[in-house]
Length: 182
Image (cartoon, rainbow, N blue to C red):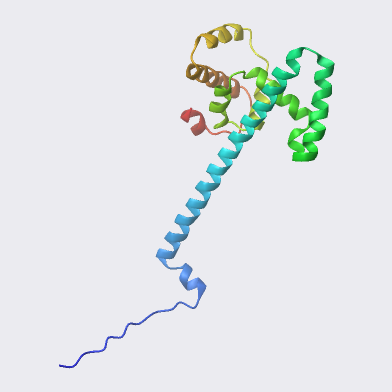
């Protein structure tokens, strides 16, 4: 009995365009693109959350340690000094104006948990816009109710308020899908 020799034919694609036109290559490329884009989104969201929380912590620390002493002149001087040193070391995110924004953020959102919950949905740019919106006269009642609520209830109240404010403003490029997910 004679053994048959089997020949295995290996096809090599020498043309890159031929390789890219194959359905399995297109599927692989699409899947890898999706993985990369999903990772970019997660990294951006995480970086934004950390930046917002950092800025809130800085504002809260200055508010409690320095400005809590109610010495306005000293507070302005210390902010100017901090700004100069931090800007030289870390860049333009620590300008005098932005440090005052950080302080204002800590004033408007005194609870870290609220900032943490919102930072997953809102960027620092959104926070900067929100912290300078004028409150309506009913805000005293809302403030009293918020104090009586748990941290999770506070988040819900804040999100409802933000939703009403955002519906009246045009500076939020958020889609309806994001607000439905809140």
